[in-house]
Image (cartoon, rainbow, N blue to C red; front, side):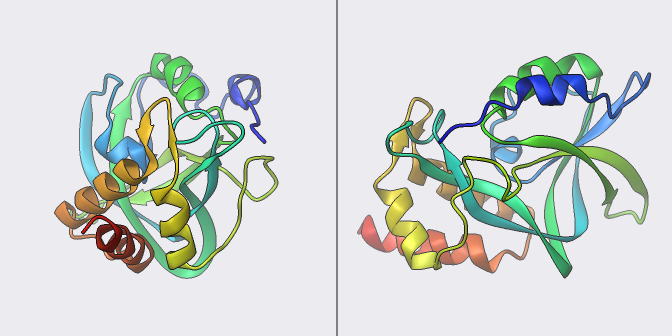
Length: 188
């Protein structure tokens, strides 16, 4: 079941009067950057792990057959590498629409390769949202993804593009890489 979170995100002003702020991308925001930004750089957040536990009713699936896309799940000691984008607040109208299926904006501390840090915003679909599909084995997730498609294309394209982008970032993500391994075995 889809859950439109646009109004919730627009009613919550997490950036105050800042004219520039950081956005952390860990899923499609890494490989599908369809918004203007002032700067981008790899970043890591701590105590969160990327999981393909969120349903996609609007992009990589349909209302009757949702696909699976990435969200973040709290996990003490975990690290999640992604991309940070320095943006202006006007991009959030587009991003709130793009991430409307259960994702809410939260603040997070981001750590950069040079040792510096910055607070930023991140979209997370928590288990309380109606589109949350929850845990499954990497094999089950790969099978689900292999059989899903939506208006933005096949679900396997999303997963495989993310896996490739994470490898380019030298990110350690066994969950994503294991799903990708299963998907690639289906394609042979």
